Amino acid sequence: MQELETDVLIAGGGPCGLMLANELGRRGIRTLLVDTKPGTAFNPQANATQARTMEHFRRLGFAHEVRAQGLPADHPTDIAYFTRYTGRELARLSLPTAGQAVRNVRGMGGSWSAAELPHRVSQKFVEAILRRHAQGHASNDIRYGWRLEEFEDTGEEVRAVVCPHLNPLPDGQGGSQRVRAKYLVGADGPRSFVRSTLGIAWGGGTGVRRDFMGGVMFAVYLRAPRFYAVFPHAQAWMYVTVNAQRRAFMASVDGQSEFAFHAAVHEGEDPERWTEGDARRVFAQALGREIPIEVLSFGTWTAGHSLVAQTFHRGRVFIAGDAAHLFTPTGGLGYNTAVEDAVNLAWKLASAVRGRNPPALLDSYEIERKPLAVRNTGYARHFADSVGLFPARPDLELEGPAGEAARREASLHLNAHVRLEFNIPGVTFGGRYERSPLIVAEAGLPPADEANQYVPTARPGGRPPHAWLEDGRSLFDSFHPEWTLLALGPQVPSTAAFEHAAQALGMDLRVVRHPAPALCELYEAPLALVRPDQIVAWRGSHARGAERILRKSTGFSW
Image (cartoon, rainbow, N blue to C red; front, side):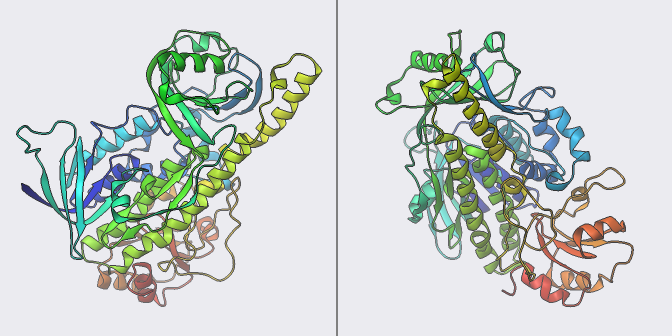
């Protein structure tokens, strides 16, 4: 059996594993990624990339590629609710098209002051871009059609065996390879082999029953070329049906004919036995009539999860993404939380591989990310309750006063709900590592954590406030890929102490100067230390204690 030596072994080639490979690859860390699938996703799966995730894609240089995928640039990205798709419209949230988002973002402030706005794009397109860029790094070895068969953490390294999954070699050889890695990351989904091998149990809630988004759901990836010909309303991105017969939601994949359709399954139904004919039947129930469709794939999944693993690592083995937390997909938080896991873990793994930081730095991954997983699964559960516990009574489709009254009530609730679930700058930007041992904490309380409102603040532990520079760049575009010391305003104290301390600690730190007074006012300090994952680690008005600040931020002193 051949033996391969690498720095980081990643099990799982979804958004989390691929993002991790990109972050490690750009740092030159030897990375082997294996995934049992033959390639990136065929089914649409997650369909919403939040603004913070788009900012990370921008940091890596390919946000514009992601934004060019999915819906055409002029296609509406509204979320709309109907009795049936050919029935009455009940509620709608109008949102900018992809083309408008690029233009509008430069004029937005307050909660939506950002380098990027959200983008409605299927995960299948995102994964293909992530894979292409991950394979472009010379230090990466990306292998689809391979599986992690076994592993052992010896304390000094991780010893593993990987082998071809789809087409084993003849004569029982199987092409298996022994792997010696410094670290292993299980980004291998909700049925994670890595998590189960480690014996890490789930915490949180599961099995929640709701009329909608709680229980078994039937998913159909379909092509319906005549949908827009029979659809009597303005186009949207997300189409939701609310009726007593069949509740469903459907996301447009390409803005033309492809859709990701998901329907609630009623008690007594057995969707595991359903056929393509049943897929057509259930879609017709949501549409309100029959039209020809091509069923590309179908299957079941379960809503009603808000699970978080009890621990995110054991020794040299870590878990991330759906292996570490499992969501009901309201708000689109699962995939976006997984990307943030990778961004957080990657720079810490890279530092540990290079021997620049103590092993304690890696302990901060769970300390920082687990509370965010609990927070985000809680938000998703709240959104699911808001829409799924609302009763879809038969009155909604009646003619006359009773039907009109039922529809008015539904419109009031759903117009409030759609803003609760889909206008979420607080969820997107407001996650904080307030109690992290790597953060130089400040006295007082941070802004309230609210789903629909975000208060920009440079208080350590959160995302840096955003601004557009006079030269047209985003402030974030000026950040160093690793550590950034922002020197803001016309009168900046000396930064020499930070520069000398960083050199002594082996930190890749760059001082970035912006003399505009408005930036100093925005950050409420002339100096701010920004981590590689674009989190404020410290801010202040002078450089005294620079060595202490940098040692704490990198895990040398807790």
